[in-house]
Image (tube, rainbow, N blue to C red; front, side, top):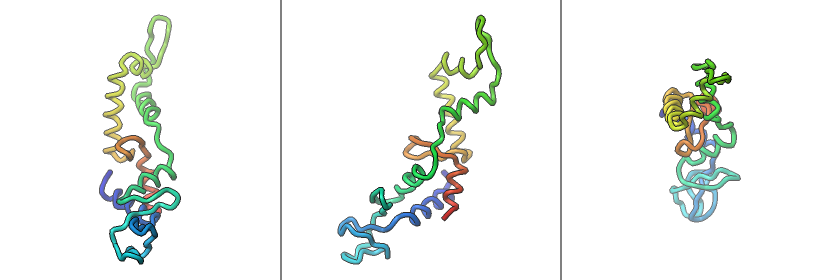
Length: 146
């Protein structure tokens, strides 16, 4: 994810969270705890929880956007590139299905390389270490909504 998008998402997270003093277990909307005067605050995402840092970005993306089915997106991309059908004895099967079934290891490697390219191009944004992917365009729109 590029630094400009990361900054926008952090701004979004700040706008949706409330500073929270975990020591006193109270909100500190001014940025300083009224009870202990600490400015070492966590962020509370109402209804979700509290934590340090910009953890709320992932929560916001998951709650407001639909994750991309990367398996389906990769298959669609491959079908766009390789629309042919192949004949095996009396059967005509699309080339993508043959590749996927005959060599699942190379299929997974190709998918991984494709995902890396899509992320680098900004088409996808990965969260939680690649556990989920979101449309780069939709993430941009959400980040710009602040």
